[in-house]
Image (cartoon, rainbow, N blue to C red; front, side, top):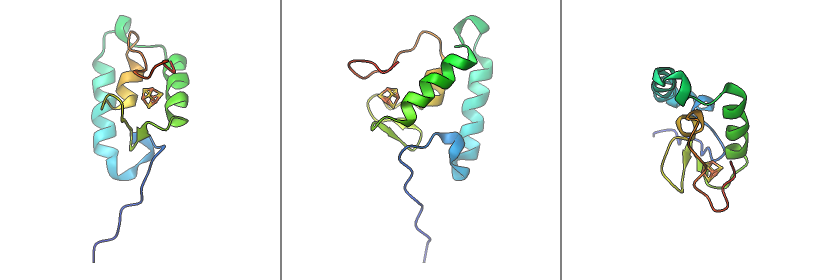
Length: 87
Ligand code: SF4
């Protein structure tokens, strides 16, 4: 019988060993962002802290917009899609 995958609600991709390849792909996409389009590291970290505390986060994805929050938070001009926005 297949082992049931644990449900991970407040996890980012980087927290999920089974999603290591996807997390690596997201990191590579972030690295390709031009400097002026990339959020500073401390801004990204603050945004992701908000996501971790948010009910809309599920398995690294925002259930409001369907994005991977690690990528969204790394883009300087992006905003949280919730109303009111959390970041
Ligand atoms: S609603 Fe905003 S804070 Fe919540 S997971 Fe989506 S982007 Fe993050």
